[in-house]
Image 1 (tube, rainbow, N blue to C red):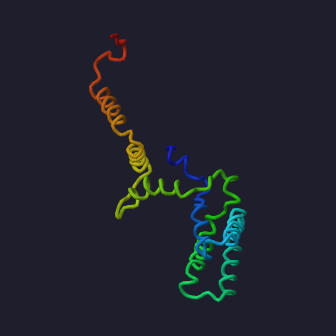
Image 2 (spheres, rainbow, N blue to C red):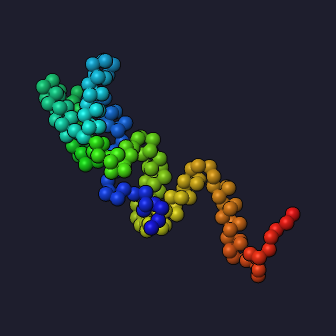
Image 3 (tube, one colour):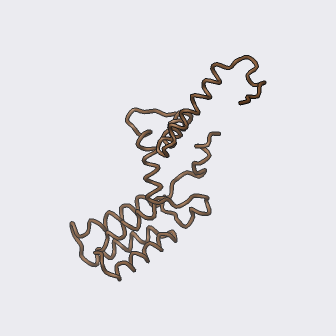
Length: 174
């Protein structure tokens, strides 16, 4: 089995970024108030405990109670849609036990840069081996190691293609 396949979660699914969830929670209320920051922290802890649906219900009830409409309710509705639509990916309480780390925006950005921007192009079809090869090259390039890698690759290809008789039997001395 390939290294890429070994890295994928066995049970499927990806745990959504908690930083994104916290930002969405912050947009449901006016900022700058310490009480609002406390409210966001309490809701965030509830989501980490696996109660994202209850948090969505709380946000909806509070928005209804406050009589929010239109633009004033946009952040609350967007957060509720995210919490209910992505509930299966928000099981932060179960993630560590299943061996899945909680992703951050940095990790998701790196995944988007390395994977989605290249493999999700229109009309592209990838097998696992081809996708893994492209991702390895993109990673080497992104890390700034492409020139070193390419010199190594060319040297190995030259050895493979132009091997002399008994080449493996001699020690080089200088």
